[in-house]
Amino acid sequence: MEYKLPMGVNINLETGVIPGAKKLVRRLSNLKGYFQDEEAYNELLKEDPVVYEVYAIEQEEKDGDLNFATTVLYPGKVGKEFFFTKGHFHAKADRAEIYYGIKGEGGMLLQTPEGKAEWIEMGPGTVVYVPPYWAHRTVNTGDEPFIFLAVYPADAGHDYGSIAEKGFSKLIIEGNGEVKVVDNPRWKE
Ligand code: S6P
Ligand code: ZN
Image 1 (cartoon, protein in one colour):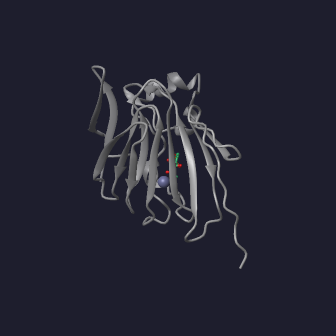
Image 2: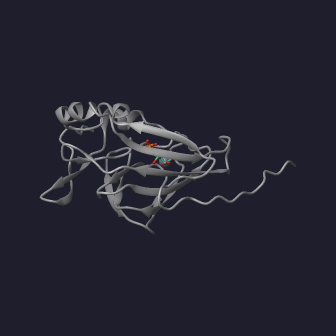
Image 3: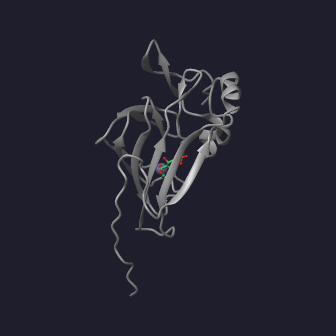
C-alpha cells in the first residue's frame, strides 16, 4: 500500500489565498448570459471586472478522497442582481458538500433538479451543508469580498450545463437597500 502524505496549510483569512493551491479567475465576460439585465451587463463588460477567484487543492477524481477550495467573491451588482458564482450540480449528482464562511456577507442559493429553491444567509463562521442532488450558487450581498471554504468529494465533478441554460428559479437582488429573494421571471420548468 502506497499511502498519501497528510498535509496542513494555512488559509489567509484576510485574502482567502491558500498557499500552493491552483488559482482560477472568473471575470464578468466568463458569465455571459447569467445575469438578467443585459444592458447593465454590457455596460459593466467594458471594465470586465473579476467576479470571483477560486483557490483549489484537488486530488485525483477517486471515490473516498476529498478536495477543498476557497472562493473570493467580490462585491458588485449587475443592475439589481448581486454578483454570484456560476452555480452547478455535481457531475456525480449525489455528492454532498460543506461550505464554511470566512469573511464578508452573502449567502447560498440552492435548488433541486425540479427547481425548488432555498436561500441560506452566510457570514463568518456559518457552516452550510449542501445535500446530495442540490445545485448551489453563492452570492455576495455585502460591500467587501465574501470569502468561504468548500470541502467536497474528489469525484464530485461539476455540471454547469442546466444552470447556465435555465438559471435558478429565484434571484437575489437589492431593493430599497435590502437583500430580496424574488422569483426569476425567466424561469421555466
Ligand atoms: C466546488 C465548490 C466551489 C465552487 C466555487 C466556484 O464543488 O462548490 O469551490 O466551485 O465556489 O463556483 P462555480 O459554481 O463557478 O464552480
Ligand atoms: Zn459544488
